[in-house]
Length: 120
Image 1: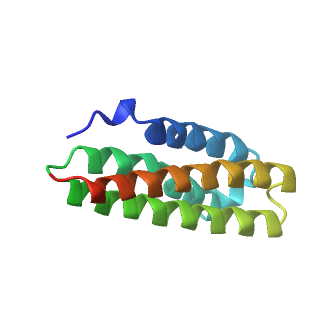
Image 2: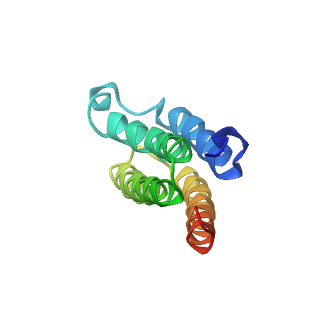
């Protein structure tokens, strides 16, 4: 359907995922299979669902996967807040990541809205 690599939303989501990997590199080793892993999986889920949705046959399917991507971004935001509260993530890094998440969410909603306005 769409070349997902051309989508700014996908590109920014990949950039966010890289930033997440960098931000979690200093998390305690005992969290490698806990919060660190969950944060990384949520981050990876965002561009992955955008890509999968773009590869589907209908705009309705694409829209559904964009919804899943939005859910993953909300999950990621929550996990980052928890990481901050338990002392793993500095406030300044949290705020920068949240700014990126908010931008991605807005772009996602705009794309979802545009898909609803067009025919398959």
